[in-house]
Length: 189
Image (cartoon, rainbow, N blue to C red; front, side):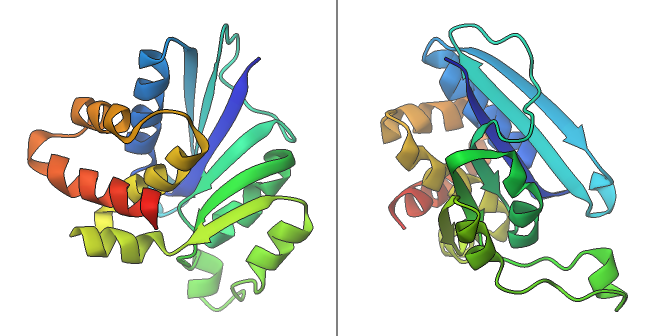
């Protein structure tokens, strides 16, 4: 049976490293893994979506509406934007940070309110936490992606040591300790 994970965020937040880490641990566990990146205006702070599909045999990297088992969101509005991709009773791991999109910055729109309640009302199993605060506690705001992966890891049967090995294979050596700390804090938050 194929499982589907979407990683959604805003350009520059590290979703590609998150998908690389996820792909690495799933490959190591013997799954067939397909990763597909869909970029919006990522260089300008636009939406970035990465699909990670795994199972015995995966034929397509694309996830359709209603098929995602998990959505990992780097930002609150991005989670709400993609909630329709979640299967019934699927899980959303979401950073509660709000990053204003251009229409909000220019005053043409207001940032929506009550997004967590709306996602829960849609039937999603919402796991929301302040991943930015966790990343800053670990030593860098740039570690939000790894804090989110730490939180997502609670939904899998891999040990923390297995995740750390995957981290060592994906992250430059000078950032290993910072990322291990962010991962552990996110996992245990």
